[in-house]
Image (cartoon, rainbow, N blue to C red; front, side):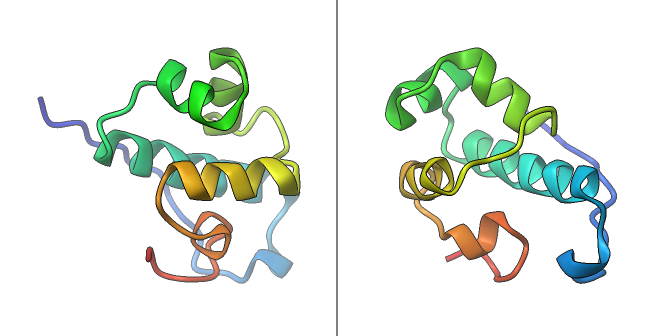
Length: 91
């Protein structure tokens, strides 16, 4: 099953983006990487130490991401915090 997520990711610097745009960009990157790793939200939540609804909130841009959670997510998703923040290509 191919899953396609289309979200307009702004080419602007995060310094020029609203906090809502930043949360949506981060959420999009979390979702894309999670799907690439064939994880569901519950499995990712277990790896990070949070409940599934919190993962859903992050992916949908409804909840800001604390730095310690960003580090845990980057490790669980085998990427970098810089990638999640839109500052680097995926590693």
